[in-house]
Length: 237
Image (cartoon, rainbow, N blue to C red):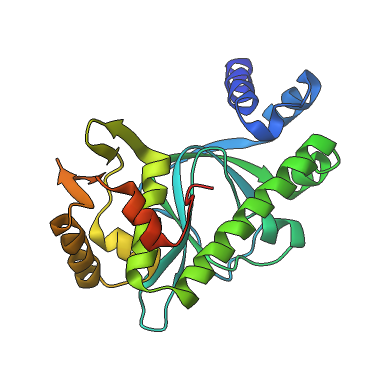
């Protein structure tokens, strides 16, 4: 029974980019020392100020990182998906968590303790992967901060829709169908705006035929116009 469990964990590990260059001995050692845990939708993974003694890697599902504004609103600044690591910056620096994390949908996580992480860090391919991961997150954070500080709601919303189209879009005869369902309240959390303002802007773009709605999914009819509004020539870059 234990052998079967370890084999299943080994199979899961091999699918993760972080361990793609690891040999069988490393994989076997990891499988005996790490856990794979399933978390429920809307479950809190950690809160701002909690000790960071575990590194998480998302196997499936999503995690939102967010702050609480002075008005008490949740402001999501990062959406993490399968393959992403969670908490690696604070973990590496031995800091406490600097944000809150909530599970979105049923999510499976690989959990690594500090001793195992320290051993993994000596593997060049693992260190290189972590550096790239931190660099990507830094870029996302800079883009988020730029949007909040410099741009109006319509620019931030256009960027959000284009990013959703790049990540979850499917080309159709009349545009790009965003297959991921997302509420206006969630959009507001992602770009720090109220639901009424989100709704007003979406309705304006519907009237202008920039977007549409099909079975509760948004369709981007005029990607070029949204790109101009977003002030990005290539928002998926």
